[in-house]
Length: 324
Image (cartoon, rainbow, N blue to C red; front, top):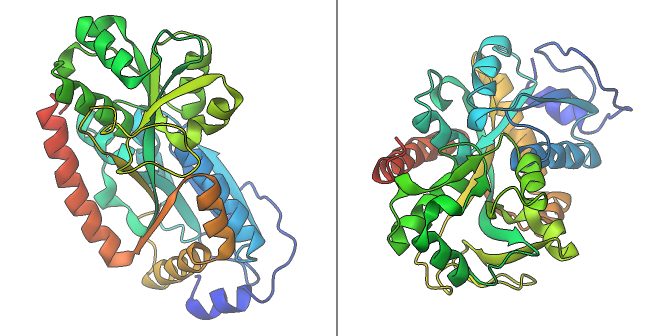
């Protein structure tokens, strides 16, 4: 069992970390080794978050090693049942998830939900980006909206899984400009890497995802950024907000971590302490700044209360958009 004493001892006695194929529910006597479960394909926001968590925990000597497991599909609703059934009681394990999973659970009428896992911490928020391939005829968000109004079926938009933040944002944009959500051509992908490939291969007209997932291709000139869903312009990003572009919509996609069901109170408390320590480090602040993530730390019972409220909010949005 990972208790507070062991956690504090581990931060001062870190050895070389080795990746293991199996870890017991209890942490080792030295710096703990952890398992990170990503219910999405490599390359997307959850995967980036997991790998950044791993990097910072190592650099801060809070862990000695880790293993990252990806199980993608349907906004996390393929991986979630596996995390619940196969990882129960493993107090050294964390699943990365967020707003996308909340929406996907509702839209897919999934049998499992986030009340069945253990909330540890909400970590980051990220605004979404509307992008098109560099050679697209859409030069502005207004061009995109004009085409959407003319014939939404001819404007396929790539994004994450059905019911997730990308899908919700597309639906909100459509509703705001007077296009029925049921007429939209939304192309869901299991991970950001697949959506990016579809964009770069000109298989879709546009893409919606967290800005961090597109930033490198935007900087390289392979994608054109039309607008962002933030409440105001962002330093270093040459694009208007959706509101500036005449689309009265804002959206902020949060991500966090959960432990499996059935862990001890001591393991939960120690995991919260470890993640809080990481989230308050300079290394984490630097990564958030570089990736355009906004730190929005919330832990334990406060995080659980937020989840209940956000689930109700997203349910209402999806019903309004005809997605639930």
